[in-house]
Length: 253
Length: 136
Image (tube, rainbow over all chains, first blue to last red; front, side):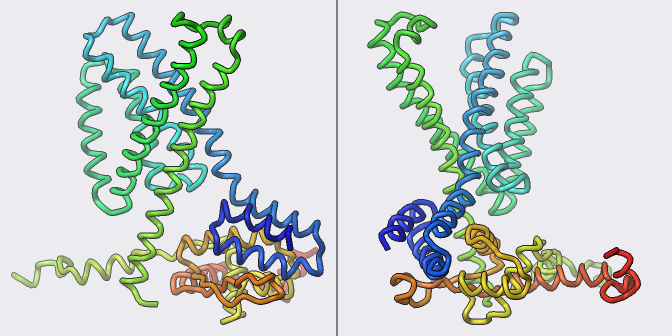
């Protein structure tokens, strides 16, 4: 009984209170003839089957966001040094780089958890493509106006029905939440870094002397990835709940 | 010339077209088995009984994790609905979660069954000449 209560607490964290109670009730009912090893194997199976997609998603968000941000920022920096654009371009391009990296992470997370047919996955990946187009081809005449027109067309197309509008809302909330989390995390990391390096730029020597700096930087990324994935999952669940409520109230069984 | 005007501009026609165009969800093999088990069990389909019914009819031992994941996924797709039932002492005072197949679930099953029937047509698959040649 104590094992069942403990297992119920574990499952409650991922399945919710009622579903966890029902699942453990089933396992207790079957487990009387199968034994405690079968019971724990089944609980582990339930946990793994429920959690593998979000966990893999967060890992992919970490690597994909980092990869895309590095790629975009390096390209933007090389553009700044080569073409010397006006100062007003830099914050704009930095925003495009950050948005592209976030949409890369969010798109891959959503593809892993909800598939490529999901509207938000499609919207995020198209935004990623648009960001890449703007970063890599900004100096080509006509690319920026074409990107602006394409963005307007995309927004108009995604305003057609509730599922597509929901995808736009999800992308906005994810972008806002992730940037806010990253800014807060990096503010903390920066304060810690300044405390140890006395304001000097941080290099390999500082990282070797204070490995906690690396750990903190990683934790800042991880917090951003978790907020990104959590917001994406929450919005999906919320939309499905709203959809099922609308269907059940509109179409009688 | 009013008769040349397409009658499709009426809202009712739009609704009808949308209903016609909405395809039933496609089902995997295990999803079909679970839906059929729920239909067979009628009002007493919950985790344990669904698992037992599948084992009895197909000889397949389903892990609880696979069954709950499939049931949750089908509930998200609106193919089944669930509600909490009574708590019993043999379950440690925990409630049962009952399942029923929705209209969309039935439509998806019928669609899958029709696809199988259409593919099997003319094959004389079960007990016919094809059966022995394929099995051998």
